[in-house]
Figure 1: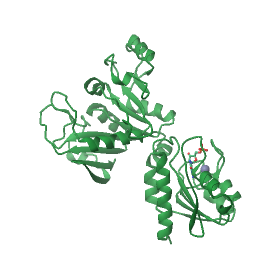
Figure 2: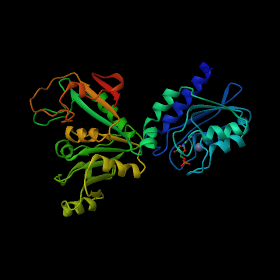
Figure 3: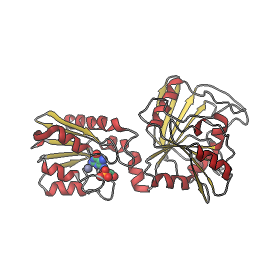
Figure 4: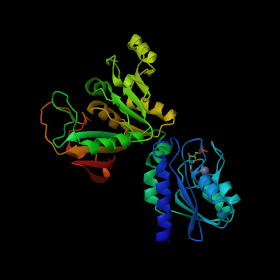
Length: 359
Ligand SMILES: Nc1nc(O)c(N)c(N[C@@H]2O[C@H](COP(=O)(O)O)[C@@H](O)[C@H]2O)n1
Ligand SMILES: [Zn+2]
């Protein structure tokens, strides 16, 4: 039976884990708490790939007080030599007597092995405390491990009549300041942001977190024809790196100009959302934000590169027969074909609403 104390300790693990949000890819966010006779004697979280795991930081803080103690950890302790040695062995050596785990690690190198090793050593293990919250925190890690692709989030801001800009293409701003700050934080929690050429031409965006998060993501521009302005803000890489993805042989001189400014340019034989996402996966990325217009968004969705939608809805009407909408043609003709979002949550943000849902 899970006690309110156990749940509170696991929630504490999640709070600790979130301190490294956006900085752990390709690793998960993990928090750990060690309790001796009802008192917390050690805490830790995983700061990022290559650094010790949450359990190790908690053990270091607890020292000798870990002997006979209970450790709460939001993800199953690892049992393999990766960039760091196995936490299962560290816990056995520290002689903890009880391990309470939020959820099993989907990594095939772990996947129950950590639990089995601890049990073999005579340690009491229980799994599944605050499991839904533990899984949600690492939804991107779970998706990446299972599907070998980054977790894709489609984000857009639209008026109540479903437009992302006026008929003439003006879009500053659809939503109010609090919603835009929420987007800046969201960018900091992602490893890359993808836009298309239209967004660069029309909006000339920064695509940074505007100091609302610890780091800026990689900014990716997908453009088949490279008909991009020579002086876009994205070509200034002092604040954040930029990658331009195009097709082989397109405008080689412009490619060189971008490279001279420090922009990475990759020419793929065929430019598609899945090709770019496969490359970002190989680079260790976990969460990718699609902040693009409707045409690229529809292609990303059709290719299964979007798992979550974050739609900001402003209580205003702009009208316009040809004003752009968040999603171009998906090839559906019947409303019964519409893609339903699941586990939807509505959050008021200032004057606006944010809908989060999963495909
Ligand atoms: N339980 C647990 N706590 C942490 O703090 C972690 N970072 C992990 N990660 C698991 O181990 C893999 C990474 O291992 P290395 O950092 O390369 O040694 C990661 O894929 C998770 O399965 N687990
Ligand atoms: Zn570990």
